[in-house]
Image (tube, rainbow, N blue to C red):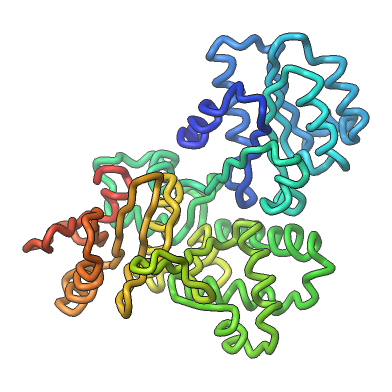
Length: 398
């Protein structure tokens, strides 16, 4: 287990803001429950009395008596004191009507509340309604490359392409280590994938999902075209399905359960989002490889995929940049900051160099422009365009 510092720092920043419930969301097995334990440890180290910290994991048999709204409320009435208390509940969806108990706890007690739950019952689009808008969502991703090498005991100074390829191949779920066999990793990732598809989508949305095989074909299609521009209409034609509205509905379900992330295309000249066509990126390249049986293929798009996720981790809103017939991989916006990124496996080919550089130079502004590649040495300058090695970027050495 490693410290998920980025997300822990977020919880620490939100600590004692009792106007909002902190809800940790993310794909199954990305480390939400572990983060809750790490936050509880932080509270103790910060001098909070253990009697004022309540961490309830509803997956545990010992907490079976709390699996109703009434019993949980009675427990809170009996145990919460007049002092500030910190309430953390894992897998809260196991309690029918949990939202009424949580809203009541906010009103009745001086309580700082943190919860996690299955995506099957806590879709992002529904949380604000359930909790009357009084919530802050902390969206969690699996391990970054930096966390991956820490978990596996690699030295940051000695990390190279072989470790990056391992990360691309095996993926970023915290339960996977370098000692695991490829067969056991594939079994694990297929299990997570099937659980998300069956429990978080088909079971939860059984009235909306009337074509399970189409849903699975859609996922495989998105996995195989990561980083390529698509639309509900183009996907429908490709899959031989007439109703693009159904495809659009399924795409949103996949986003809500964090199987994929959508990058919208942004017209930098017109300052507007271009509708219909966008790009999708998978939340874990290892899962993508397990589902497709295609580890090690299409390295360029997989590199683009992990750069996109890294920018999300760093707090950027990420778009695909469009300027007439020119396009750049990512326009990353964070508060008043804007950055442009091109991602490629190598700049060794003159044709690739021309394509990547000309796309960035087509944007006539002063925002920082960066080309990310696996190359270590680049000869020549690019009119203010910076070149950064992808590994250095992922490790924060840029």
